[in-house]
Structures are given as structure tokens and as C-alpha cells.
Amino acid sequence: MINHTLVNKPLKLAKWSSTWSIFWAAGFLVSVPVFAQAPLVRSYPWLTLLLTGVWLCLAKFLWSKNETKIWGDLLFGFSWSWLAGSIYWGWLRWEPLIHIPIESIGLPFALWCLWRGIGKVGNCFYLGSLLGTAITDLYFYLNDLIPYWRQIMTTDTALVSPILQQAVIQVETPWGISWAVVLANILLGVSLWAMQKSQLHWWAFAGAVLCTILVDGLFWLAAAFV
Image (cartoon, rainbow, N blue to C red; front, side):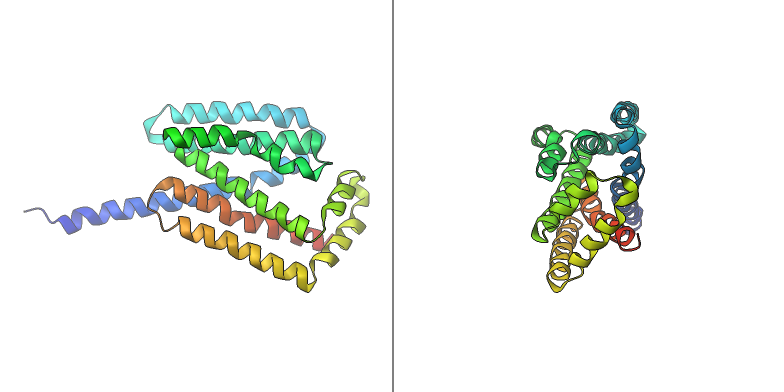
């Protein structure tokens, strides 16, 4: 007689391991590559843009194999984020108003794929990353940080320190801190909601959204100690 409890337990453990693997991989792709892309795109925008092709080729290779298909799926979604970031930060970073429209360059395609049930992990990762970016931009608008954004993007790197310090002073007010707490809790709530789902694409979405808080926190610390 088969003990179904013993059979199901390893399956549940495997599923739990898979969801957390996707979650941490999504978090890694949101938080770590941006610190490499940020300095690279300012000096070598065309190289950064061409690297999108490298990510797409690697994604296609991983997608073609059953054992790595899910990682190829995730990397396809990351490629959209990398492409949008390369275009905006390479040539259009002086104008904050078009940041989200450029970051949304893959949105129609992602929504179409989700409607067709194609590439759910990667497209949900992209949507989570886009949501986190939109919330961050909203914080900039609510705290009137857009003028500092424009100044930093049009000033020599060696001269941005005083501008960053002024921006930090404006953030470290009751208004700035309150909105940081509110928006961070929105991101946290959305992530926890997604993590209640069992499907892997929701965990990719959750990892992308939640780790936006980490990226924002690290950039704030960097600005505070410049």
C-alpha cells in the first residue's frame, strides 16, 4: 500500500524550493544588474543597448531546454527591463516625464503574452519591475524631487554631491519619510499578496516588486553618504 503522505511531502518540498528559487532569482535580476548597468550606460550606451541581444540569445538558449526553460522565461522578462533602461538612461535620462513611458516599452507585448498564456514567469517579472519603478517615480513627484533629478542628469558627475545632499535633506522630512513608509508598505503588501499564490509566475512578480525596496534603499544610502 502506498503512503500518499510520504509521496506528497517531497513534491510539496520541491514546489516550495522552486517558488523561492524564482523569488530570489527575480530579486537578484531587479537589484544587482542595475548597479552594473547604471555606470555602464552613461559611458557606453550603445554597448549597453547591444547587451540586450546577449540576454535574448541566452534566454532563447535556456528556453529551448526543458530543464532550464523557466530560467529562459525569466531572462526574457529581464531583457525587456534591460532594453528600456538602456534606451532611457543612455539617451533620454534628462527628462523624468518620459521615464515610465520608456520603461513601459514592453508592456503591450507582455500583456499580450499573458493573455495568450505565454512566458508567464518572465512577463510577470517585467510587470513587477515596472510597478516598482512606477512607485519609485511617484515618490519623486510627491516629494518634488524632479528638479534634482534634472540637475543631476545635466551636471558633471564630480559636481553632483551638493545636489544629492539637498535632495536627501528634502527626503528626510516628515512628509518625505511618511510617503516612503506608505509606498514601501504598498510594495510589501502587493508582494505578500502575490506570494500567497502557488504559481511560479506570481513569485517572480513578488520578487521583482519586493526587491525594488532594496534597490531604493541602497540608492538612498549611497546618496546620503556622498
